[in-house]
Each structure stands twice: as C-alpha cells, then as structure tokens.
Length: 522
Image (cartoon, rainbow, N blue to C red; front, side, top):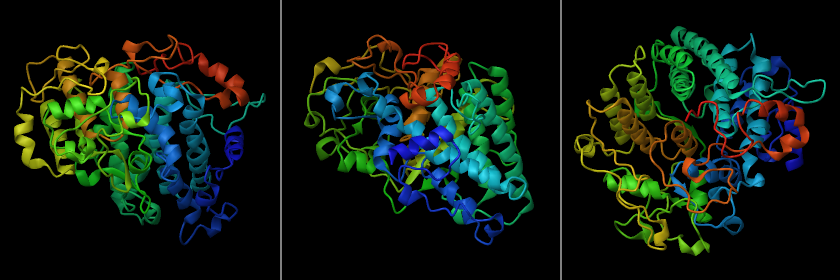
C-alpha cells in the first residue's frame, strides 16, 4: 500500500491514492459532471477526506508521526516517555527519515490531489465548492510549509520535461496562500451576503455549511499567516492583515466560532497515543507555566501524575530515558473530544492583539484584545469564574521545573530558559515584553495544536522553552537555538532530485533541522 501512495506523489494526478484506500477511497471518480446533483458527493466526499487528513483521523500511527512526535513535542506541549530507537530519534535531534515523511506523504496523498480534483470539476460551475477546496488546501498546506519550508503548491501536477516537479519557495507559497484566501473569501462572502442555496452542508464537518463562518475562518487564517510573516515581510504582512481585519464579516470572535473538525465516531488520535499506547505525556514547559500561573485550565488539559489529587508532572524534552516505565506515571492528557481543533476565537483575539502592537488598521486596542483572548479561552473551558483574578495578577510566573527522576533535567529559578513574564497587561512595558505576554497566552490557549505552537515559538522565541539535554544531531542543530524545520523526505530525493536541488537554493542553508525557514527571522 505504501508503494501506491508513493506512486501517487510521483505523478500527483490521482486523487484516490491513500494509505487507507479501503476506508477513504469511496468517491465515484468516474462519474460525469451531470451526476453531481442532487447530492454533490463527487465534490463533497474528496473534501471530507482532505479535512480528515489535516491531522489524520483515519490512522493514529500517521497522526503520531505527522504531528505528535514533531510539533506537539517541539512546541513544549508534550513529551514521550518512550525512548524510541534507543533514545536516538527526533526528540534528541537525531532526525529519523521514516518518522519525517508522514506529514509530506499525507499532504500529497490525501489533501492536494483531492482538492485539485474538486477544483478541476467545480471551476465556473460551483464556485462555492471551488472556494471551499482552496480554503481547505491553504489550511492544510501552510502547516506543511511550516514543517519543511519550500513545498510543491502552485506547480502541483505540473511535470517538467525531465519528469521533475518544481517547488515553491516558502515566500512564493505564502503569497499563493494569500491569493487563494482572497479568492475564496470573495466567493464565499457573495454566497453569505446573498443567501445563496448551500451546496456543501452535507459534507461540512465544522460549520454545517454556514458560508459566513467559513469567511470568518478564512479571514482569521489570513491574519494568522500575515502575522507569521510580519518580521520578514512587514509590508506584505500589513496589507494582508488589514484586509483580514477589515473584511465585512470579520474574524472568529466567540467560542462558537472555533474551527473544529468533527471526526466522530473516531476518537481523537491523542487519546489513543496517550492512553492506549502510553507514548505521550505532559511536557515540562506546560507543567512549569500552568502550575506557576495557577491556571484554571490545567485540569482540562492534563491529569495529575499517577492519578494523585494535585501533583502534575511533565517530562523535559530530549533527556536520557532508559525505559518506558521511567516516566509513564507522569501526567496524561485529559480526554479530548472527537474533534480536531485547528483555529479558535481565542487565537484570533491574540492575533488581533499583536496586530494592534504594529498599528494595523482595524486591530483596535492591544490590551482589550489580549484580555478578550484570555476570556474567550476561559469560556471554552468553562472557567470564567477565575478570569478577573487571573488577568489582574502580576506576581505569578512560571515555576522552576524539578524532575524527580533525574536532577540533571532541573531548571531552577533564575535559569535563562525559565520565563519570568507575568499575566497582567502592563501598558508601560516595551513592545517586546507585550509580545511575550501575548504569545505566552496564545500558546496556552491553542493547546493541543502543537504544530501551530511550534511555528509561533520559532517565529518569536516565546514562550521560553527548555532546550534538550541530549543532542544527537552531530552539530547540525545547535542546542540553544532548537530545531527549526524538518528535512525534505528521502523519497523526494530519489524520485524528484532535480526539483529538490532547485528547492535547496531557497533554503539559505543545508537541508537539516538547524536551518531556519524564510519567515523564521533571528
């Protein structure tokens, strides 16, 4: 089956090739366009499967490698108690090729071909499906670019005479994302404004076909990507960010707007990884920050260690682990619902707060946005009774981290890797200090989306995370600068060598985990 997937990547033309062919490949691709009506399954089903593979709901082992043992860990959210490969693995910066291909293979086996299939058949006929496919494609592929850097996007399915396929640089990919979002927003906005009949409600796993909410999601995604490039390309960032902030339907604003993909009756992949496989636990930064802040969201994120009443234990990343039982008693994740959270209203408020720091038109007041972001997150977890005390507190800071198993892993008060930022907004603080507060609270609020949290950590350096203790990268990834990206997969080197060679010119460094992405400006 894996060979079938790889062949799909090579020719990039067959929308039905997936790792779980028998479960996913249910679309009647040989139907005529006239058979689209009345149920539109030919267009809807491929997009359902694209959404279900942004974080794989079909195969937990894919989700584990696609995000959990990359972004979830690199963000400081989680850590594995399992010393995979004799503790030589991604966590200790000995990057494993067979771990690092799943994100790429899933994107080019389950997402890009399905979106292209729908776009090819809906162009000029069903503009809402076309726009929906564009939006889903950006939702998925900006995450892939934020893992690897250059990706195959605008050149997808365009095969050169030498049988290679060209990559977009990350800058080119992001500009293409903005173009796609602009088109999708304009199209779906027209449907929302004119109350045009909803075509895709039967396939919408998030908003039941509500065009207005999809426009708000697209605006928020546009703002996210604009903030992402704000250091490296501030003029473009402002243009795109202000377009998002001032679009008539606005951005996500309440917990009811949260973008969650319903995967029921399947359970969240992290429930299996944590509780059935015992392969993931709380990360040390989460313990340090949430306990130090006395954060009321803590019991909604994690369970006490060894099922005790009040003690939470996280594991530091990249440490010596001799056996799985050494840290398996540390805090498990609280049970997650049967949905994948990809963008929340709380994040939207924090994006708006950062935009206000830069004076973007339509961003409003940074403090109001910051506090509303915290409040919206508290609403999401039904802990608003503690909100006022929380936002006015100016003494709580992250707690020193103590590893009861090995003192080598401890982080003491005064350690440069321990954050000292407090919660209360301080109007007299510097712009950088205000940014640290915003990102700290965003990092807490967007849990458990480790991919996005890792991207924001790389962009800003916040929150401060504990560097690995054991670094097996052979000098490729400096310990103090953390891992910056994942190398291109080996199969691309074997089958698209010319394309990869051209892509390497846009990396500004070697193809390893220490090279910064385009937007990752030091």
